[in-house]
Each structure stands twice: as structure tokens, then as C-alpha cells.
Amino acid sequence: MKLKLEVEVVLRETIKPSRPTPHYLRTFNLSFLDQTAPAVYAPLILLYVDPIIHHTNTIVKQSSSSSSSTSSKSRCDLLKKSLSETLTGYYTLAGRMKDDSFSVNCNDAGIEYVEARVTTNNNVRLSDVIENPDIHQLVDQFLPCEPAGFKISSKPLLAVQVNLFDCGGMVIGLLIYHTLADASSLITFIKDWAAIARGGATDHDEQIEQSTSRPHLDLLPTLFPQIDLIGFAQATGMKREEIVTKSLSHAVNMRRRMVPPLPANCFGNMARSSMAMISINKVEQGRKDLYPNLVGKIREAIMKIDDHQVRKLQGRDALVAYMKEYEQSYSSCTAILHFTSLCGFPSYEADFGWGKPEWVSAATYGYNNAIALMNTRSRDGIEAWVNMTKDDMAEFERDDEQLLTFVSGL
Image (cartoon, rainbow, N blue to C red; front, side, top):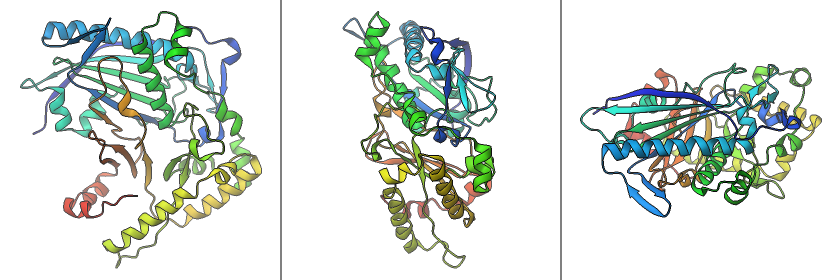
């Protein structure tokens, strides 16, 4: 049964850093990896049920609509205040992309913050929504805008929507501009935001020091400096659109693969695509015995991304050679599936003071043939969020039982 939800926006405002960004930090140059990241918003949705409020060492469980309303307001006030404080360290998120799309104007323009009230039929609770999820509801109603979007020079780089249920449940939907940050960076930001919300310290510098480790914003642009994509395209024979579009497949977090490893709070895009190729003719399509071979090739491609491979992305000459090799691999493909995995990230640790999320969803990405892998609520399985065209999805879902036979661990 499809649950009917009415989501009404009751507040829309701009949240700015609690302290102004110094003048010498007002221009932030993107790294090469940022330049070639997809120009879409990456979503994440956190769902909290039956909140337990921790306040001055007292635990208060919501039990009535009036207490729910009061607690919801106090929680939203806390979210806004701590968000403003967190943006001081993540000042790039409060800026705007410059027209050249290669740098960020860190002008403290702020991020978009939305509050919405959710009403349901038949006293439906958020727990019911989690048990019977509807992808269109998650995307269309709980996120502040559509994930797809390419020209956002005047739009915020981060948007947050807090959805409040009468039962006291809360859904926090976030969108971060992928050109500026990858999934690891988004989850690190949420972790720091939650830590500041729980900290309750009055002095901002002390709170940042005690609750978080300052994000390394300038490390990746130093390691992977931006390049002139026009000149780069001439050298490789690739159009700029091809560079951006074809720098995708199975994203691998390179932070831990470098020697020495980069800090976990290294902010920006630090994922490289690994590609596994397999040729299957029409006669072989549907043969299940071929899939273990594909799994093995995916595993092999992922394992190849080591410190040596990462170093190939440093320096213009090395980049030209690398991208030529990468383009040759892609040119022989008739179809490409893009995978990204958020498994193993601490997305379920985002406790703002009323408990950890009951469920975390990647919802959808702004392009087709994209698959996001997430840990399940029980933490003992993996969810696959699949984005395809309508026709491809109909074929994909044609036999649910057959789909399950293809499930295999990497």
C-alpha cells in the first residue's frame, strides 16, 4: 500500500557561517579531480524515528503532539545553530561557483536550509515509511531540490531540508554539489555537524577543537592541481564534455590507498574510477555462469588502484598519458554502468543528540545507469539504489527472482 504524505514547506532561509571567512581564503581553486567530477548534486537522506532528546543530562522521550511540536522546534534551532558553526570550518560549502567553474567564491553567501511539515493519512508514522519506502517520495518530497543540475553559479553548493512528522520523527535530506565534494566528504561533514550539535560548547573555537578535527580543504588542490581543460583536451584529443562524462564507473576512495594514507577528513573529490570490461554476445546474455567472472574482474580492477596508480594523476604529462589510456578503454564499450559505494562509511553514526538514524538512503543520483550501494539498516547486508531509464528499468525488474540469483559478494 502506497503511503500518502503531504509535505508542506514552512520555512526557507539561508544559513551562513557563524564567523566570516578571512579575505585570504575567499578564492578556492578546485583540484583536477574536482574538475572532472559530475556536475550534479549528490543526495543523502537520514531518517530518525522515536527521537530521544538529550538535554542537560536528562532524557525526554516524545509522547504527545504538543511535546513533539516543542521538541521539534528546539531540535531545528539546534540544527541551524550547529550548522552555522560547522560552516565556519567548511567555508567552501557556503560559497558559490565562479563562472569559470574551476574555482569557488568563498563569499559566505550561505547554504539553503528548508523546514517542512509532513502530514499523513491514517496516522502513518515515519517507521511505516521506512518499512514501505517509496523512492519518488524520498526524492520528490524529502530533498530540497532535484539532484540533477549543471549550471549553478548562483545556487548554493549545499542544501538541507528538515522534514518533521507529527509523531516526532525527522527526515534530514541533504544535497551537496559533487564537483566540490565526494560521498566521503559529505559524510565527514555530517559527522562534524552532528558532533558540534551534541557538544553544546559556547566557544566556537573550543567546540571545533573538541568535537571535530578541522577539515583539510586545501590538501587535494595541492596534490592534484587544476589544469587548463581546453589545452588538456587538445593534447588528448578529447572534448571537455568527454573528460567529465567518462571519468566515471566504479568509484574507489583513494584516501587510504596512498602512501602514507590521506586523512579521513581530507575534503573534496578523492575517488578514482576503476573499470572492468566484459564482452558478452547476444547468445551469452542471461548466462549466470558468466557473472562470477565479471565479479572477479571488478575486484581485480579495484585492487589495481594503489599508490602508484594515484600518483599517475599528479602532473600534467602523466595525466595526459593516463586519460588517453582511459579513453581507449571507454571507446570500446557499448554500455557503461556507474557504481559508487557508501558501504563502510559511518553514515549511521550521525547522532545530533536524539539518537542515530534508523535508516540512511542514497535515494538517487542525477544521471542514468548509476548504482549506489549502501549498508542496510541491520548493517548485515547491502542495498543497491539503481537509476535507469524507464525502458531499461522495466527490463531490469522483469524477473525479480532472477535478479536475486545474480547477487554475489565482492
